[in-house]
Amino acid sequence: MIDIKTENDHFQVLSALKHNRHKRNELKEVFVEGVAGINAALANGLTVKRVVFPAGRNLSDWAGNIIKGLTGGRSYRLAPRLMAALSDKSDVSELIITCEKPEIHYASLEFDGDPLVAVLDRPGNPGNLGSIIRSADAFGADAVITLGHGIDPYDPAVIRASLGAVFAGRTFHEPSSVKLTEWLSSLKTRYADMLVAGTDSDAERGIDDRVLRKPLVLIFGNEAKGVSVRLKEFADRMIGIPMQGAVNSLNVACAASIFLYQAVRNSH
Picture 1 (tube, helix red, strand yellow):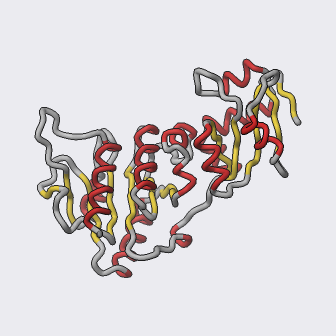
Picture 2 (spheres, rainbow, N blue to C red; picture 1 turned 180 degrees about the vertical axis):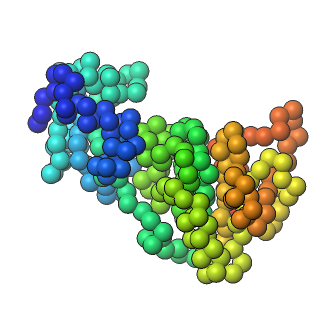
């Protein structure tokens, strides 16, 4: 048990794991706040590295059991003001954990049947990214890949927005569009009828096109810039959702849910 009453080195590490992608990658550790995210990390067998809770607070049985069950990690009891500084909730959390960062790569992806893969090109909003990961889990996507300079899929805000679904699926980041397209090309060799479909509100083909079925890769673009020119050129076709109202596009998380649902529906 480590008592933390000042913003010492221990506190600085916790803060860095929350705010700094480089530190999360360096320590291979992620910061998790919220009951759903913590439960998902535990349910998926991730090793807890640190548990953090406020001094002087009566903890629930749920939090107490997690602290008691910690093996090989560290417990931190924080002064209430420091716990409030770490917590993003208006009602300060009674428990925060850090756990091992899932290590997922192309080589570890094995598909049971025809795959459904979601690629998120330079995602810029953690809430949208977390929502898409949650939808991908709900509709049985086999992998979610974030590409390029964008939000870390293991940012605490993404984990929270995904309700921990980021731990349940196979989600990882690919910095290089070249490596991604090489891997997608290898998938197209393996699955001769695989379609790589980019999404665009101005696309001529609509989502009701029956070719939108597994095996399938769906590419979703950055909220402001859309799908990159390179990925548009790589895609077999661009597809969109027909709009009837005054607006000409949907929030990317909302659109992704519709595309994923339609792909699964068409695959049955």
